[in-house]
Image 1 (cartoon, helix red, strand yellow):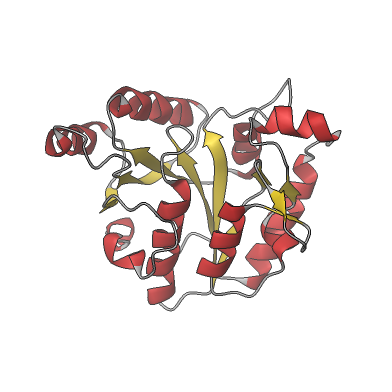
Image 2: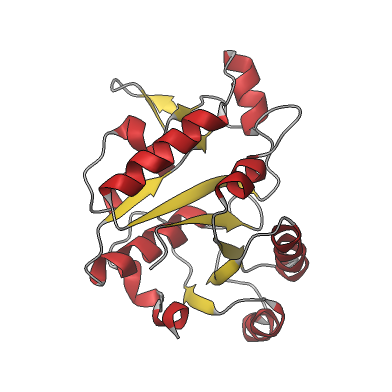
Length: 226
């Protein structure tokens, strides 16, 4: 079994956290000890327990290994913007060694670590570098989340090409219906099934809240073992 993998999105707001929760639910149902990792998160808030990000909070609750918030999200940035802008505003330098140490610690505590990205594949964490550089450094296999909407076919194929160009393996993809009114849904899914270089792990129906429980039913992890 893979001990860690990276969840990438074709863009921001495509449902990475919803999909990650569904995958964690499916892994939990298999009896695995799961940990979630959100290395960098922008758009965080301080509600009296320190600066925390809502996506990281949801991931922490979905995994079944008990972890501190800081273990799940070492860089919680305030501005709801690109991480490089948020980091610069706070005078923060995102250190890849910190991210790697955090990942290694979670691997030691679990059977599998789900690592969720921020934004799209080439999201910058500084003026000179992107989070994908660290993912390449760690040689993490990738699950790609496609937000099903107009334009997603191009975004999905371009992102898949970029991931493969970086020398990483795409082990699966998830279709997340972000717009219930999207026309030609079946045709879009059929095209993605034909063009994506990995199996479809599942389709998540439109849901307005990430708080929904028991989402593992939408994910089929058996395709990873076939």
